[in-house]
Image (cartoon, rainbow, N blue to C red; front, side):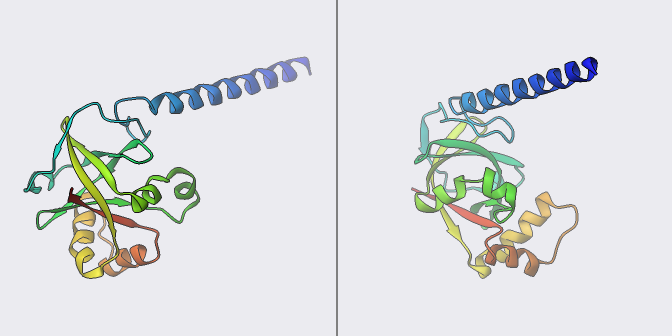
Amino acid sequence: MNTLISVSKFVIKAFIGIAIAGALFIFAMGFADGPWGVVPGGAFSESAQPAPQDWSFTKDLDTVEVQLIDAVSSRTSWIMEHNNRVFIPSGYMNSTVGKVWKHWPMHAEKNGTALLRIDGKAYRVTLERTKNPELLRPVMGELARKYMSAQPPLDTMLNEVQSNNLWVFELVRR
């Protein structure tokens, strides 16, 4: 019985230690130069430059880093380019994980002033949420092409946008 109690105490202490270490890590990342994988980070250290006229170089990029200016925080995100316009998605907004983990889209919708960092260069942009199905139809096709092994019907993807489960922001020059 004493062994069981000792093991239980050890497990509880280990769990508490891991929880504290995790919380400290997340807190410290708020001061880091950008995100680390899925863990949000702090402000970018680079000087920002105007957004380029030609976004075609983003066509085959897997991920980029986005930093909001109001409620300073940064994260890694997917990016889609279509007709020289770029878009950032945020999915699972109606899920429990999305409601707990994803606060940045609400901040971006209120004030979309942001920086987009690609290969160590930070560009000044504004994030503008869009639900326009005519604009999003080819963008959803690009999202499926780049990130999904099986392409769901575009109407299904557009329904995700209309149901607020998938938010899409266009990045425009500021």
